[in-house]
Amino acid sequence: MKNIFLTGATGLLGSHLLKLFISEGENQVFLLIRGKDEREAKNRVKNLLSQMVRGNSRKGELSKRIQVIWGDITKDNLGIGKQDFSFLNGNINEIFHCAALAEFRQPLEKVRLVNVRGTQNVLNFTTKCAHLRRFHYVSTAFIAGTFNGKFSEQDFDVHQKFNNTYEKSKFEAEMLVRKYFNSKFNVSIYRPSIIVGDYD
Image (cartoon, rainbow, N blue to C red):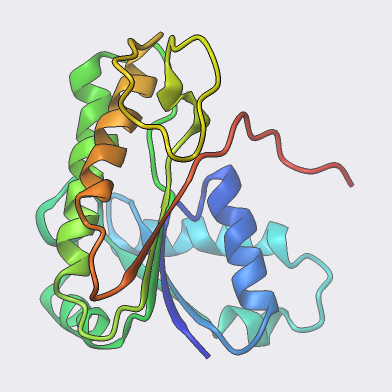
């Protein structure tokens, strides 16, 4: 059993990860969810779950393994209340940071607020987790930007330029994550290409 902290659960990739987490083992999953208030945050997850486990006889059982944490990655301490923040610090084993603003034509500062500052806030959170074993960060293959040629897993800064503010912000965010490679917990970076969901 693992206690997993997940950002971006209402997005395409995050929702698929959530489905995997509650389908295997006895994982407890803590979802950081935005909303004007806690009630709205919980309703967003309720709607997500109704689509995810439709017709599943274990719906009630699975939903008990999910806890909604009202917060926001763009805020200090992720906008989490003191009691929840303290509990998470003492119990989280793995973090999956999927939340991002994936819009290509937004002003750079607006995208940076979510993708760069938000990532820094999640990284700050990792330093306070006493039992954290792994930190997973979802980057993008498009940090390669305008680079022309083979861009491998080992490549990062090859003096590339960027096609849009999203690519630039994700490059800057990955730069932050790479500075957190350490001996206290494992750090994994994933660079998916275009995500289009699945076909049923």
